[in-house]
Length: 65
Image (cartoon, rainbow, N blue to C red; front, side, top):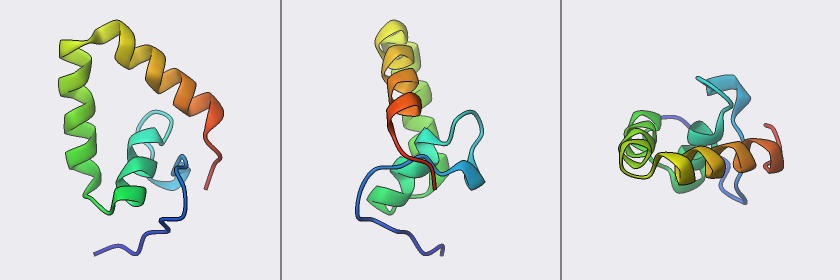
């Protein structure tokens, strides 16, 4: 299991597929990256506009690691 730094939200650029937002959330919540990505895909199918806007804002605002 990977060691995670959980002091605040961040973009995990080392494990990114697009911008690292899902990987950063997975590190913060100490969950597998695939689970957070799956949840993001489900949210994208249910609420496409809101999910895209939230992802882009998170990618722009969250610090890199």
